[in-house]
Amino acid sequence: MNHSKYDTISQDMSSEDVALYSLASLVFTLVNNSCVSTGVGLFGMIANAINMVVFYRQGLSSSINISFFFISISDTFTIIFIQWANICFNPYIDNTRAPLFYAEFYYITGGWPSGLCCRITLYITVYVTTERCLCILFPLKIKNLITPTRTKMIIAFICIFNTATLAPEYSSIYLDWYFNKVRNETILGVAFRSNRDQTQGVTWLLHVVLTVFGLFSVIVLTSVLVIHLRRQTKWRMKNSVENKLRPTLTSRDRKSVVLVAAVATFIVISYIPLTSVSLVTVFVSEFYIGGKLFQIFRDTWAMIMLVEMTNASANIFIYYRMLSKYRQTFREFLCKKQ
Image 1: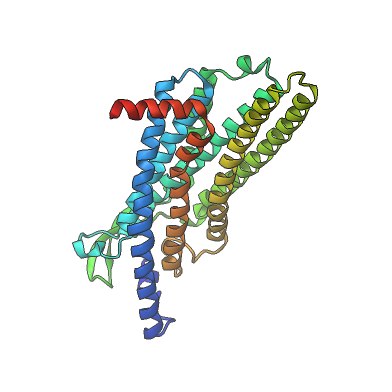
Image 2: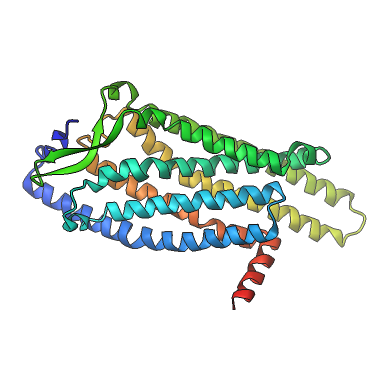
């Protein structure tokens, strides 16, 4: 593997520019990774643990509970991998003098796994949105179409398929020892196999394509659901004989629309930056692990990870606000703890 790019990254910059960039990068890393992201992650791990307990207590006999339960698991793993990034990207981690290039080590042990978990969450969300859309469009057939067993099989397929897309990347990279001129010692970092030229960017491209397709599916299915719910609400309001029923039906429909819209909004906001940066990585070869733009690559992905961490931690607010059954179980769980 050629590591000379790491050693020559600052040759095109003056000493003052290098000092200013290093200081800015240090401050950014301490604030973004060590403080904000770590704090959000700790909250997210607790929140997702509560989500899993609540949905498990409600029973995993319904497809919607199964889906939300596995989204919480996927989000938990996303947070764990990003917390690992916060450790590896800590500017003082090298003071441990461990013979390890932490940034490269994380790229293999946490970078792609965190992206994988994000995509699994996205596609389970696509499935949930599809299910709710079908539930309204075909209310009499939905029980035969969507069963708990089929839901588990679909989620298992989502996990296996998305994991398989990492094969091109991991087939051409591995951990190996090399001599680092800056540290003047042999350290463990990323090495590339002979097939690197054929596989570089393939997994990134698959990641972008699948993420864009997933986002597009969420937006389209949510739009169909919202339009249908609005039409259904107007029909009920028009044909309702008892005026007392009107507020209840309208409120229930509105909550369903808001729930789906909130989930879709969080997904879209979180994944647009991720998709954009992934696309840059595909077409800009130096914006990569081992490239001249590695430091910018690292800091950019640190910000993306904070967005991912926030998305993975925020579902508890949506569930509590929109799902009355979740709210009831949540309160019962807290009362027993007290």
